[in-house]
Image 1 (tube, rainbow, N blue to C red):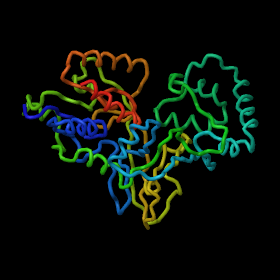
Image 2: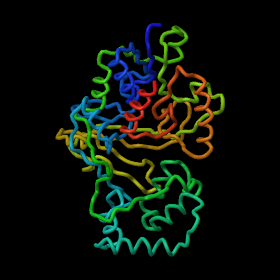
Image 3: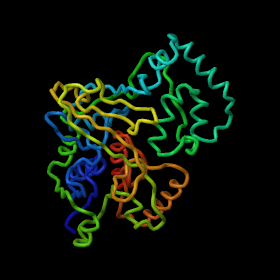
Length: 364
């Protein structure tokens, strides 16, 4: 066989696997059906602005080993994710913190905020939440739910909150400090120069074929590699033999504007159901850009269908049970390792992708 490993997908999981295997002397081929590296963390330089083509990616982790690992391939800036929520003509800080509560209720102290939430939750008498709406109301009350959760969630999932299972929102953390940092992790930032450069460094010295479909390659060279690491959809690999796993997809409208600053923040969520998009990303703010132009992306959540990019697994009981069938089937193929968000049918933050890749490699 020409290669020890064929890695299907040049995203972060595949790149980490390829880098580590190559470092251990294995002969590796990486393929990707897209015409670029880096999968969904792909960034494109537009007049000096690193544009996140598939949505905002902010690296954050409390795993020191993973942080040190990713820093081999990039220098990170000190970006802190502090999104803004817009509800009609009102602006709120996220995550839910004292700045949010002060703006919403005109209060100042943590005790006042806690009392307000407790008062609203208690008045509803919800003991066993039957759906997402009741779950959210039982955690934070109607004011926060109506303005900051309901519309955004319904746009994300394409369903009424009363038709979504309660377990989707197991908790809604409220911070009773004036802290707008969205993440609690010890390490956070954006790689200077973008994520594509990170993956390029990981894949340095490794053969990569872009615009290459897995099935087409295998039809031409069925014995090309001894083992396969597959980061595509696991149900597609098995020709949907048990049925099709569900996903949510995202459509992006990206435009360059002849102004230096459009919204003053990298991430602005639109929580009113009447606004068709979920959020607007202004990419230059991830790297504190000073360019005379700016690039923004509006994000529209939509139901996935073949031909669209699958983004978020629909992790309900039905799809979970279906995935388990595929995972059990995969055990019969010891020469194939499924990984990443599509191979594992799981939403991963980037640090968890790296950790999963490193851990999976230890097994093989």
